[in-house]
Length: 195
Length: 276
Figure (tube, rainbow over the protein chains, first blue to last red):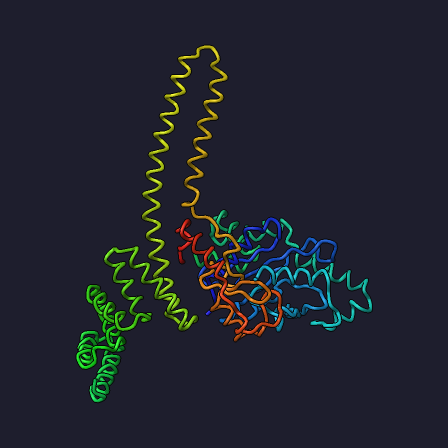
């Protein structure tokens, strides 16, 4: 059994200092705390700056004695993250997990990984090669991917709102639903339908 | 006691257990009663019968059987536990809580990770929370009427003072307001302990994120909830979850100071017993 009392406390604690950390974790649906969506801001001074990265979080029955399963939903160009699947190569999500870590500290570690790639232990060999051999090209691609996939301009948000309102949902609900799932249109729709 | 009677009583106990599992409590009670008649000095027969009475909400009999079980075995976890529940039913809160606390201590000694420990804790926490709710609403009612009386008295005094010293009206107004505000702060402060907030981090386990119940300290000086750190050592690895230094179950030592700190915090802040 997942320790849901702990997960509940983690969510409260994490969202309380959202202002400082910029890190958010929300359940994908109110009914199930084992499936969550995390968001982290791209670290300043990196090609990921200005982007907001969504991370899919799955808690197995053993949590917190087993690491949470995390992968990027937002496409990202980084040696330790698969450009195809979003899989993350990070020791604390594997054999270096400790139950004293939390979803928030795990997301902070991922954020740190964005700042400090480890090309010698790559998840995506192509990206790692580029990082080592053509660093300039790497920076350009990473930046381009950030701008293309991790930045939802306000125009995008308005378009999503319009689309959902056209489906017959009240605008205020649409906006709060979009906000609570970090702007993901499909998740917002799921949320609106479920309740 | 002849060994034949003992054997027969054992068979009756098993019959009782079978009936109990099928929710046939009357039949189970009959079987345990026969076992008790044959061997009245076996505490388990009494606690098993008490459990049947509990299922039927026959609390007077639960109490009776548990008291007999405890007479025979002072360390009977189930005896103390169900006696506690029976006393709570009779609204004997203080005595009931005492019995549950005893059951909890005994249960932890026997098996810190056992289901009984969790169940007893839940019952104890609920009882404590209800007690707090009851007492705190009385306290806040008294405090509120005292507050109103004090405000009225202060305003009357200010009025009398003002009629004595005509002239410095503005200055008086200001200090009068200050006094009223200060009085309000005094009463807010007095109500603070009864206002639910966050339990301080140093009283919470870094793994459960909940208040300590049975805290143990590692050689690194970090305190964890006993049942949880044992599970970590079993399933994750033999290391301290925070420092990652090697750690073995035999190195864990009860942290009595923190346990005492939790106890005294809970005594003052009964709302913290709230379980979700």
